[in-house]
Image 1 (cartoon, helix red, strand yellow):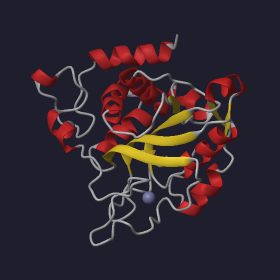
Image 2 (cartoon, helix red, strand yellow):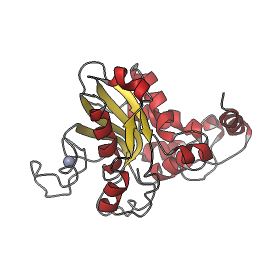
Image 3 (cartoon, rainbow, N blue to C red):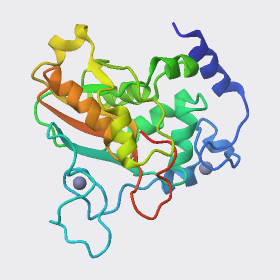
Image 4 (cartoon, rainbow, N blue to C red):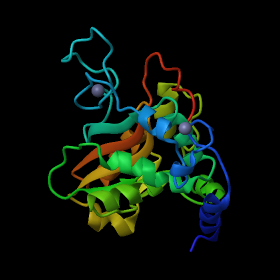
Length: 252
Ligand SMILES: [Zn+2]
Ligand SMILES: [Zn+2]
């Protein structure tokens, strides 16, 4: 029993507050909600056309069949990536509130959006969250990806396996693509007790944000070494590589 999480959930219920997306007061008919109706409608899925593998929206005028610079360096085992929404207001505020401010209960809204994303995985895949470092998890009391994975697992009726361990590579704020890759390379391994469950299975890897895919790549390689057949990333938000300026912080 996580007393800290329980206390926070109780506080969520009783403290008056504004919308976690925009800060405005939530109207009485939306009182049960942490996010106002306007913010919910502002959450938009990544615009088409997108890369068939990594789902990044291609800029205007870019041929659909062009080599995608976003995912060409990804390991083969990481077959695809999908995200529910674009990392722009208010999605960035929600990611921050879940990741840094202890708003664990936001996970149900975010996880539900993720569960609606269509992922092409045959058979019965496993749901595996991207772990954070143990130090960060101690500070926060939970891993945000696990919170999202629990919701996705329930909605899609797929088994959740907390099968990865992370040894380093926790902080990526302001890291460039190369630094990011170097920082998370070799950061993950499959926990030995999960090996038999992961062997030969396809995995839906869950994270809050997809930025360059460096974290997902590293986790996917570890899952492959642990015997997974393929890995598909499902994230809540996709940081757009061009023009959004949102890439610096909240990296995943
Ligand atoms: Zn709002
Ligand atoms: Zn791509």
